[in-house]
Image (tube, rainbow, N blue to C red):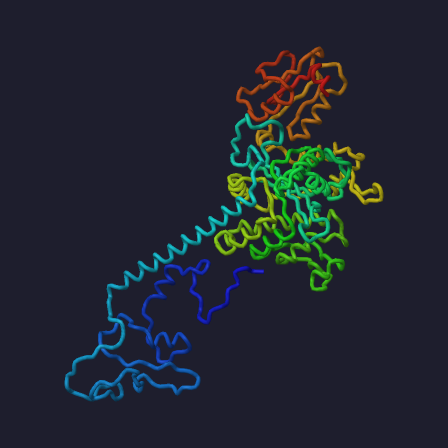
Length: 554
């Protein structure tokens, strides 16, 4: 529903205007003289008849034309009777009948002062400038107030504001991406108000301008630190309830900390920021941007929530649809007639649609839309972003086209790593590899969400086994590939008696980020010369010769 649906005025709008402000050309037309018409209609005709001056006619008395209405007889210009008292001698048919020159009497109108026009322009410009300043100041204040209420700070991603990340800030693979965990809850007034029934990992590649959205099944059975096994959607609620603090903000922080730890254990990637949103905030945000446009892949029929849709069980029809906040929320939370996995796909569609609309010029150029968008936050949103990170992230996301946003899940072949099951009478989702075995999931996620800098450098790596431990090089290669490394040759070293692992950088122009990650992972410092001349390096940028220390640590 469009939030700035102002009533239409009776006259035509000026063209080339933005957000109600008249353009320069239209302003000139509006402020210039209006030709005196024989027949006026409505307010426009009255304004023309009663105007002070047209700045073109000579000074003196001129006949006026009365306003024409539907009940008044039309009067021609020549027979019009002036509203002012007649001069001596009278006026007949618009011509004076007195031949004597008479002293002209002043009309009861403001005097004609040509020099006042520049002053009018100056005052108008001042008024518009003041209006813009007040609007900007108002929005700045609202942003400041919203910032204090929503952007709590505490999260940290090294690459959030700079693609040229200092090496010292990178600890392990994946740190150059910005991983944001989006958690949706029902909020006050709903059953299970703190259950995170929506969990989406948004992984942003700020170096290569890509975004991946991964839905995490709400019923995934997990072990959470300090709590018994349960569905992942209950982790936040339990941790929040168990918080030792009475402050809501601290309780939310404790809940998200436990949730982040659990997601990292399952997915194998760090969580840098959190966004916690309830139903009210989501619905109001969609309304604030004037609704979202979604290409619905198939008709959604759900009679279980028809009572929320004017008793209509058809929540959304197939094809391009425009959703207001209420319809978008129904589309996001429906699951009884489809599945939790299908719902996750719909939620990802809505996120992309909301991103496109919120970052569009039409939203951010409209102060009223911005104001309403800020109003939709408040107590209904919690994030551990700081305002500086949000500004950087807005700039980065705005540069990512929707075609570069990839939608991921853990269900569709060939990446189907979870299945449904029953534990203690509860319907749950569990890994196909086995209960609590997340190895397949982690391998897929890390390889899909490649570290931005590793992917950009794309260094070729040769891995050789310098021990007698069987398949040691193959095992290491599989692990490095899961982090997105470009592993080439895998084999045995000529000498199998290496006690310590060796990392060799061969190009002299090192791919510094890849080298840094490998040094941290292998606990070595790179050298520039192969220890054995019989080793053929081929096109490799790096050669890893695994020693006995690697066998012990594996």
